[in-house]
Structures are given as C-alpha cells and as structure tokens.
Image (cartoon, rainbow, N blue to C red; front, side, top):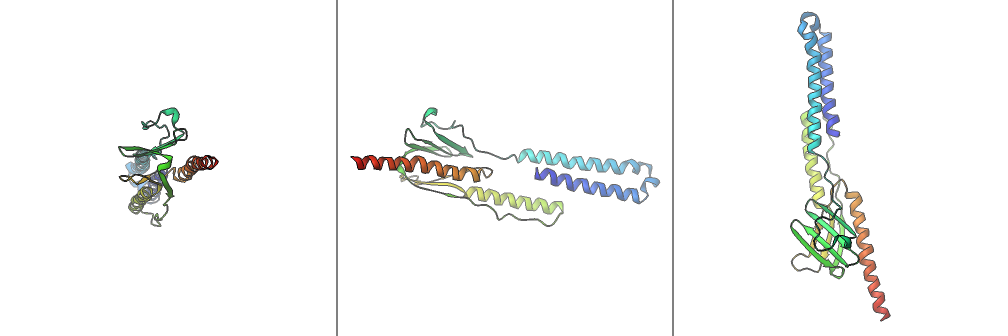
Length: 209
C-alpha cells in the first residue's frame, strides 16, 4: 500500500505540473496537437505508475506463518495443542504426550519436556532509514536498504530453545515479522504454561511419594 501511494503521488504530481506548464505557456494555442497531447501524456504517466505499484505490491505480499501443523509427523493431529511454522522453521507442542517437536528446514526432531533446558526470545526492530529526499531514485534506494534491515531483524529475532541434544543443542525458530509482536510472547506463555506447570506437577507428585 505504501508503494502504491508513493508511486501514484510522484507520478500524478509531475503530470499535473506538466499539464499546467503547457497550458500557461500558450502551447495549446500554438500547437493543436499539444492541446490534447499534454493531458493525455499526463494521464498515461500517472496510470503507468499505478500499474507498476500494483505489480510491486503483489510481489511484496506479506508472508505469514502457518498454524495448520501439516508438517508434523512425530505427533498425531489430535495430539497437537499448538503449532506454528514459517519459512522452514516450526514448533509444535503436545501436553498429553509431554513433547515438543522442532523443525529447521528438513530436520525435524521430537523432545520430551524433560529434555527442554531453557528458552528465550529476541525481537529486533528499528534502525530503518527515514528519507527526506523526495526524488524517486532516492526513495527507491532507501526502500531497498530498509528491506535489507527488516530481513536482518527478522533473521536474528524469534524463539531460541536449548535442549538436551549433543548434535542440536540450540534451536532458532523464526517468526514472520508481520506476526512477531503477537507470536513471540504467545509462544513464551505456551511454553511456560505447558512445560513449567507440567514439571511442577511432577515435583508435587514426587514429594507426595
């Protein structure tokens, strides 16, 4: 939407200026073709910008995570309480099976609650550039730099889980940057409730014995 508004504005405004210059300069009186050429040129220029913006908007459609759990093979669908996957990373948890399933690309592993050592989250945002130069090439360059910054923030953010596994002791589960603010605290609370409360229940049973 931002790209659409920017390109539309910066194509419509120059076209309008060109039209006014042609009208005020008397070009309409001197050249009959110019009387129709200026507005037609401005109209074509404006809607060409809109077309480019629409195509760009489709190419940059926000990527969101998937909660369907279709990738999970280590648990039956009815055993999965919560799941999430995004861009090759995934996590699923089952209270009844006392298990967490983690995914990184093609690697998928299942861990019992007692194998989960620790977890933490990181959310990196900001550091984007603000452009005060309204030239189109400057806007494009700033937008390109900001896209790289957003991608770097997304790559370094997410849920980090440490497990009892010599080969894969630390897992990094990434989230879509469009869902980061919602999903990161949500999964922190899911892990707290299901794993911590389960372990506390085991401690109480052990104490009673």
